[in-house]
Image 1 (spheres, rainbow, N blue to C red):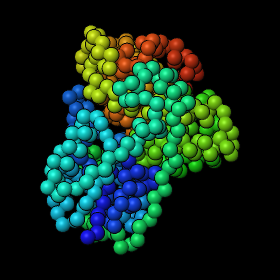
Image 2 (cartoon, one colour):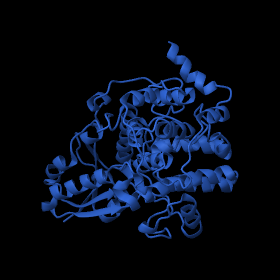
Image 3 (tube, helix red, strand yellow):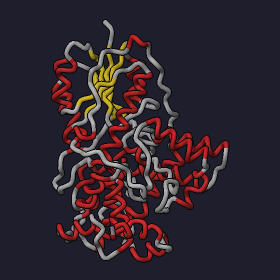
Image 4 (cartoon, rainbow, N blue to C red):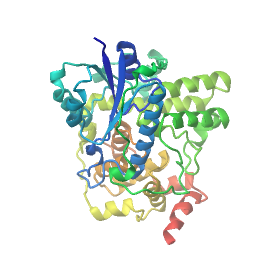
Amino acid sequence: MSKTGLVWFRNDLRCQDNTSLHKAIAENDKVIGIYFFDPRHFETTAFGFKKTDKYRARFLLESVTQLKQNLEALNISLFIYQQYPEDVMPQFFEGRNVSNVYIQKEWTTEESGISEAVKNSIDRYGVTWHEDFDQFLFHPDDIPFDIQNIPQVFTNFRKKCEKYASVRQPIRIQKLSEENRIENTTVIPLLKDLGFERFGDDHRSAFSFSGGEDEALKRITSYFWETKKLSFYKKTRNGLLGIDYSSKLSAWLANGSISARTVYHEVKKYEEQIIKNDSTYWLIFELIWRDFFKYISMKHGNDLFKIGGILNRNYDWKDDPKLVNQWIHGETSEPFVNANMLEIKYTGWMSNRGRQNVASYFAKELQLDWRIGASYFESLLIDYDVHSNYGNWQYVAGVGNDPRDRKFNIRLQAERYDSQYKYQNLWLQSKLF
């Protein structure tokens, strides 16, 4: 009897360098894919924000659309549902002869809970589950630490990984025969089906890109090979204006439209063919930061979401709706904070420099519960990644991995990074109209 493998896509929305897809093709006679727009991802959180708001929702829709197209080019059908996975899967398995299910392994509570619910719902089918860590630069099997011994300080983590670990080569995915395609009448929902009105792009946005694997690869081609902006990344990465002060790859990395391994090896190729300098290294440095927060999340579990953080520190955090709303709508006493908050409000994007400043102001100046700010970022940021978002917020709030517990001087930061007021004027003058 022929075997069918089901690839359940979640935050691995790509065809190339996808371990689950590669294994499914290698180990089965037929392969199909499935994706869920889980209603839980669009509910309102305890802090009053939609878990996924319109900017991230649109980017996700674009990413899944491209995934479906790219899978079709491999003769693999992607079934799409806007329902709870545990409700759909039992009926979906009926008569399909699915022997194996392949997923990217997750460990945070919500994702793990959904996985378990689905496993329980289809237990009677006796399928074999294959779960692989596929979101890292350095695979967990290759790092020189046990998870419980992950260093609390990034520099220690980075130096040992750079010395003792290597980055695996990206995996090539082969095309299947046309006989693998099966009838599929499911459709990708529209933005309105997810609860949002259509919206246009703000012309001031520093992020004017669409979602999807092809778009990620186009961005690499542009930023690396066509403009060679990668050669100057370290000098420009703290910028605030325009699309090229940073790579912007975080958005595609966040939902797995591209793998960290692919980015890394493209940087290495660039270093061989164009130039190797501090800037090329710094992009890899940032990929290692991304790994670090994933490993910290794996080590500390739910402490990532607790008010005391991974350090279990007690601060007298406030919950003042008026102050929170002033921060959200750019109505604080700090123009630099306001400009950044208006940018995320109208575009779903904010620079790394901006994020650090507004988070520090929220937690250290206003002394507001940092989890409220983290939840707001989760809702709006196009490049939201659960581990980086909550890890960075803890870091800035003084309950995470910052050994110095720093506090940003907002005005000095504004003078240093926006001395000509170009960024602030771009966003604050718009409030007059």
